[in-house]
Image (cartoon, rainbow, N blue to C red):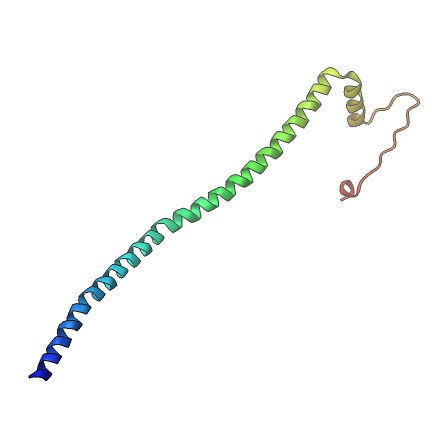
Amino acid sequence: MHGSHVISNSRRRSQSEFLPTAMHVVLGLIVLCAVLISGFTFYPQWTRLSSMKHDLARQTARLEELKKSTVEHEQVVHLLKTDKEYLEMIARDRLDLMKDGETIFRLSSAKSRS
């Protein structure tokens, strides 16, 4: 009788240990499923956000280039409107004109040859 008492006691102990272990496993599976669902839900949005940040940085750099170019063009327009010597120099250069007694030397760069 003492032997059957040991067997029934070990069954009770193993059954009483099984329930908390099973609960931990189930809880772990629930957490794992929640992480996977979150991953599948947010990963596409995260990659899209990353792509948008990269595009924003590229567009910001382009905007800075355009601002610099705009300032340069505004300076040229101001000179064309206010500086008659600059206007004359640009007109003569573009129209290939020269004053009496003036000699024009044109030097071409490697870029303009190709």
